[in-house]
Every structure is written in structure tokens, then in C-alpha cells.
Image (cartoon, rainbow, N blue to C red; front, side, top):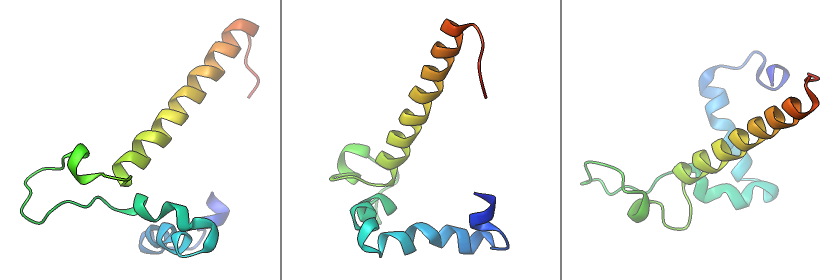
Length: 85
């Protein structure tokens, strides 16, 4: 990751997902770059504002994947009574 972002500003890094979604392999991710909240809304409604996928769903999904992987590694390490890192 450090090699990927070396010498770039936070603004440069923040644009990376938008650059990726503009490529053929990244096209699938286009709906995951925003939450479509009406201007008059005072809060985000996941059910109403995240129809068909949005940034909130992406954050939840990837957090869940990382959480499950971390717990899986812990379980495996506990069973083996030692962890290799």
C-alpha cells in the first residue's frame, strides 16, 4: 500500500476509487461510490437511500469480510495453539 500511495496527497488518494470505477474492470463498483440522499433529508435511510447498492453497503460488506477473516484466523490459531504471522 505504501508503494501505491508514495508521494501522493490525500486528495490524490481520495480520487483513486473514482479512477478505478472509470475502467472496464472497475465498472461494477460505480454504485458503491456514493449514497443517494435527497437534499432535503436530515439523515440517511439505508433502506431508501441505498437501493441497488451504495457506499454504505460497500463499507458494511468489506468490514464484515475483514471481521470474519480475522475471527477465522484467531480460531485457526487457537486450534493450532500457535499463530504464524
